[in-house]
Length: 501
Image (tube, rainbow, N blue to C red):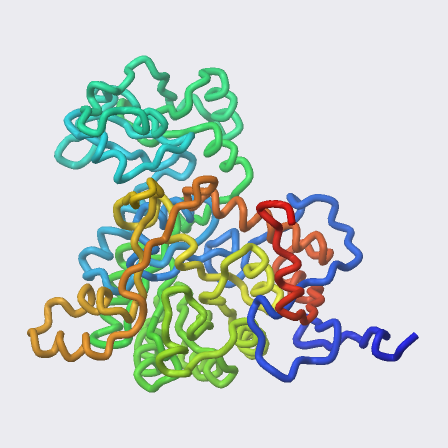
């Protein structure tokens, strides 16, 4: 046998192993793959996906603090399934306060209801929902505080019905008032809710309690509630994170967010390894707020050490891998993401801190590889931007495909949102140095139009990755992951073909 065919002994790198010699160049997710190992894990449901990073999350998914990614609907939905949404720092403080409190008011067992008045049109509704099964709009009048009384509910218009209705039709004329309603007090758990909905045969049902609408529910959402553990705060409410920048009175803003109920604070700037970040981070850490503090972005072990020393317990890793980011092409600055996570996670582990891998994930395999490299959680941006729950209205292109707009956080559009109140000269000066894609169409996947659909796909793939490695938890997966290097042809070989060759 040729010596070139003899396998190299594994090379250990802080738990994870390479199946051959340690690489001499930095690697992206597409450069590497996972090798299966002997496993005693009999079922994907034996796997615990909790990140164990000090946050309330029960799955290792965090939505990026981008204006086009994380709004209140996505944050609440993600938390209901165990992830963590990070509200962006570009929101005014009052808006952030209101957003945090809104998420805290949302139901845990039920879906947050979408409510429109009887006079709203089908066009209005289509900006919220595509024609997909398991979704619907409650047609009702609300009182001054936004509460919907059960006797004001005209009915529910399903998303599928919206697809066949005339655009100018009134929802009040389409609503069916013969659809069943669940009494929340009669439903002890998610399995009971599933059985009750199955008996009704309804696509979507309303849930009422003490004469008021508290949510909606479908068979799929009831099923998910039996499979996922929600991310909750100490009071049993949905968890949410919020970001702050490094300029201005960061400490006062952090205090205000904690008072509103935020569960994780993210101190964020594009270049996290700078003096301004260290000053801001120290000022926040000195407050002893009692919640985890994440900070970034960085890509080196030195950056981890400095940010952890300044007070961060979680470090955000990634410069340039995001779909909306032009940093590497504009500045040549950044680092291939797999190697960035590998190095920083090892440094964080030595200090008792954790890493969030921020950017560059396009498939469930990438999430698994980030966790294998040592990340506690993975931040998702553009992937989540093309979902029903992401901010912004649904639009339709000339071919009838539904999409939402997304943009980079250093783009001209983001600069306008962040600095729109500056005088014209200062705003023009900042626009001159804007980077990033100002607007991009992110199409909804017709098979997975909601963020929960993507969560199902991602966690299903990652759970299988754990079973192949013989790991039952995120830390164990990092210790058992066996990673190999592959050529571009090897990467392409792993892709399924939509048609035969």
